[in-house]
Amino acid sequence: MLDENKKSLIEAEERYRHEIAKKIGDEATIVEKDIETSSNQIWAKIYDILNSNVGMLILTSVFISGGAAFYQNMQHNYESRVTSQKEIISCDFEIANRLYVAKNLISHAKTVGDALEALTGAKKSLGPVKPEFQNVGLAVLYFNLYQLTGNRNPSVEQDLREIERVYLNRYHFYRHFLA
Image 1 (cartoon, one colour):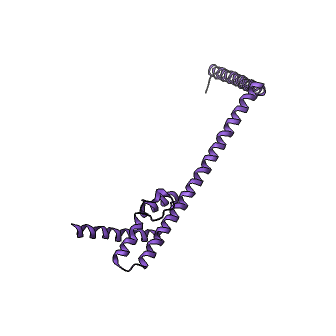
Image 2 (cartoon, rainbow, N blue to C red):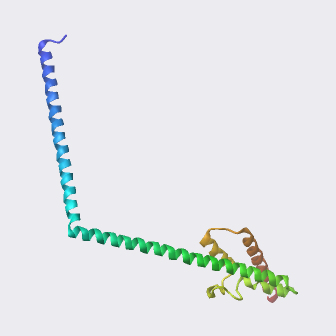
Image 3 (cartoon, helix red, strand yellow):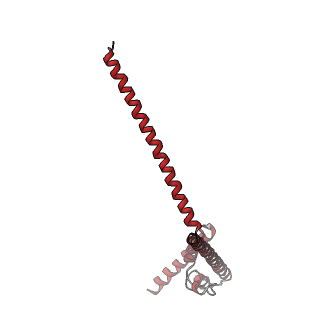
């Protein structure tokens, strides 16, 4: 068992621990109050500054410049979408027009030379939608359209492959014949 000396020593240690815990708790409460007071004072000062003429000037300039930047960004996005849509329509129409002309000329061709001549639309347009499409091949136009839309059209791809195959065969024939 414990003798009286040890009991009184343990009791004194416990009282000491209790006093230290109380002091730490009191100091923590004081620090919390100081922090709360300081933050309230900071917010009060910020409010006073923002409520003054200078603060209103700052807030106004921030909102106006932010609004102008937002409007400019929206306008740029709109113009980009419009330009992209115009390019999509132009490429799509040019491809459809060239394929229609090539199919029509091939169906009315009387000789192999006429049929091969009909395929020149694969590399050069007779009447382009836009002047910059004059010497652009069908495959490049289709690739541009694919980049703009991200959509593939298997029937157009098949037609392009067939035209390219025939066109390349014509090139190899002439090269072999003229060599």
